[in-house]
Image 1: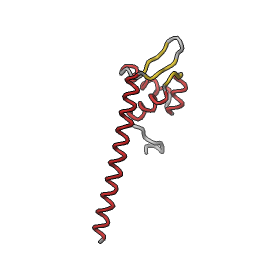
Image 2: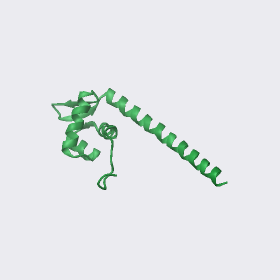
Image 3: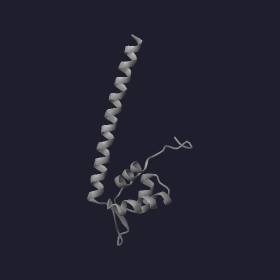
Image 4: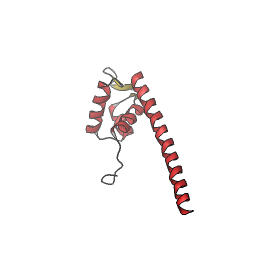
Length: 102
């Protein structure tokens, strides 16, 4: 926690933006990802440069590209592995504490 707010790392923010973007306006992306306008501009620029997002000049909407979808799926899979490992780590810690107390 920083300044009473939850800290979100850059990859999590990118994933939140990608998760929100399927033919959506910049304002709606900003609200769904809970970002300031300045932060959103920074991340949209990065995601466009990486080829994870595309912007339609005519409709003024952002959409996730297949590459962005692949990143989002890979990121989600990674989070699942981390959660699984944390669960196993907690089980080992509990087992060790039981052994120490016995």
